[in-house]
Image (cartoon, rainbow, N blue to C red; front, side):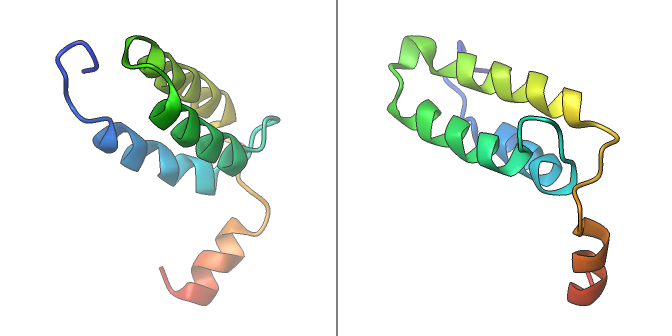
Length: 78
């Protein structure tokens, strides 16, 4: 997508769902925020590497629900 000049927004929109719901050893939400900041400040030739790293971290979080996520969803009725 990066090589085609497409927006990163669809990828980021997908990843934020898992950064909130899953919790890996690298503190998913904080890492997501760091990647977004780095993506926006890194030179275009290298910025898509940030999303690649986010995808790898997100995959490693799978199956480890974030503490309090279920309770928060129930309280917010979402």
